[in-house]
Image (cartoon, rainbow, N blue to C red):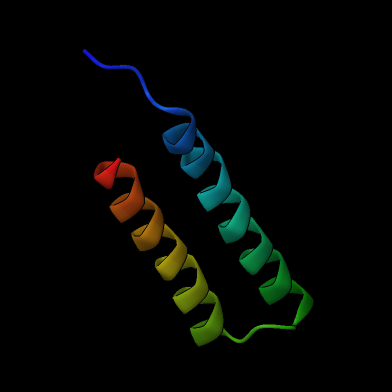
Length: 54
């Protein structure tokens, strides 16, 4: 079993933070539903690709 690299740990922390900011902006009325969905979806997909690419 291999341990996580620092980059993988950073991705696990950064992706939920980005999603949280997008949801907060949605609740404040800054983002619309489609923008929130695309921001959260893109951050999750990018984090997953980078995480498994490490």
